[in-house]
Length: 225
Image (tube, rainbow, N blue to C red; front, side):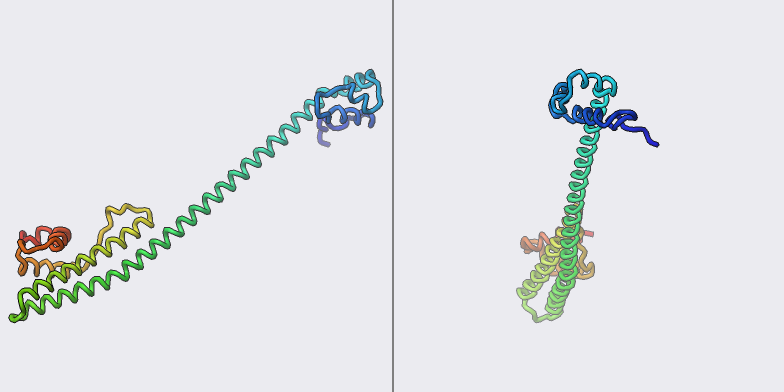
């Protein structure tokens, strides 16, 4: 049989004496034997005897410690519950941000997948027009120049549009945006570089030509090995 708690009724303790102890124990303000006797209609002397015999003061202190421990446990439970709720909310927000990032990355990747063939098709079409004009000995020089500029513009547009899409994807995934490599068809780039080198004097290059040439071909476009 488990030991009784100090505030529980003791062996041999009469019902009236125990009720008097409970009245003493449960007083909200400072405990008073006289106040208990007044409530129960008992003499102060009897309250003093019962208090000494049945250890009211020590038992009441044990009761106080018990109540304080319960309150502390409840406060701790409340703190743990609050912390668990905060953690759950943080996880929910992280999951929402991750889902949003993945959606943005998927959109960016779809943009890349869509832009790449369109850009490459435009570039190849422009290159084909340039090469057809160059092969025609009767083609006007100014028409060839315009076709070359259009091909350069197509390459410029393709590079920039795909670069933006790659950067959007990198941002969505939390990656560095200064390392977004843009991959175009190397054969088409070489074809355009060869055309620029062979048919466009460097002193005729406008800003777009210089920018594209310096970015994509560098020394090869300048005619150096």
